[in-house]
Image 1 (spheres, one colour):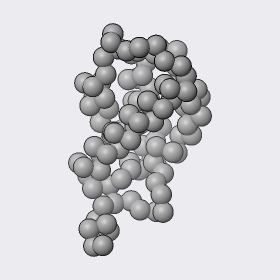
Image 2: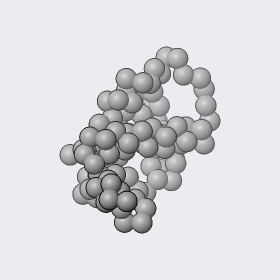
Image 3: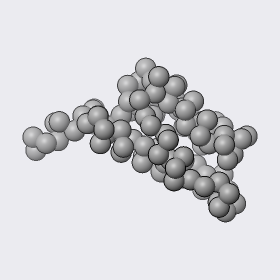
Length: 102
């Protein structure tokens, strides 16, 4: 299962009040939404990213959310996101515990 909680985005997004946007803007919004969800995950768990074993499940969860407003928009194929990206960070930093020692 995916440890990311996408329900927060569902509460923020009102598809009936959304302007028409092009594909590149859609991908940018999807990326920003993912960063917001990952920030919430960090706040809740002190981990920056979910485990790689949950990557497919997390993309499916995010896709289900997107399907509510953009039913024919495949977020990975349309935006070029790779499955592992949802679980890959930078400089091998995985938790905030090492940051508190600085």
